[in-house]
Amino acid sequence: MKQMEVWLMKGNVQKLVLVIKGLETGNTLERWMFNCESTGVRNAQDSSQIRSDKSQKEITQEIQAIIRQITASVTFLPLLNEPCSFDLLVYADTDAEVPMTWEDSDPCNIENSEEVKLRSFNTKIHKVDAMVAYRLDADEI
Image (cartoon, rainbow, N blue to C red; front, top):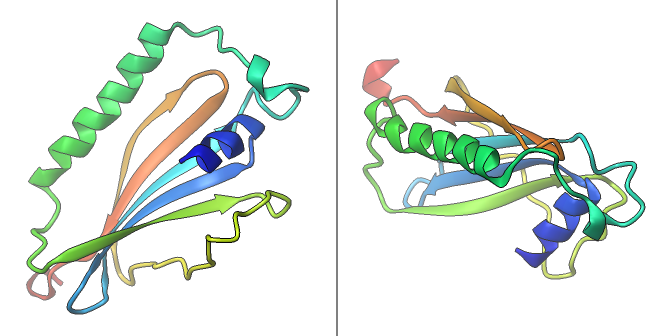
């Protein structure tokens, strides 16, 4: 997570994707995407000095709204009927320094998925758009 903080503060992260896969089938069941746009980072000389003019309270409220929406998504997401694992995919700039312990991955896309756009939030340093894609049960197709 320390690497993520460094990349976020340098504006190197384009997208974060949380992938949920079935252990038995290996199928990607859900794909939570968070597109990150660096709005106030790129031109800064020292990333430790970057500050948002938006209050911490406003930022916290926007993040809480997304968390509530993610929690409420249980009402439309299909049940996961098998043990699952998750992976975090980071789409970073090509010039970002990648730790040796990290490895490349396929995008884990879901064919014929349903997609739901979630709320966005903006810290004035980063703008984050969220979306979830999920596999429909065979009965629902």
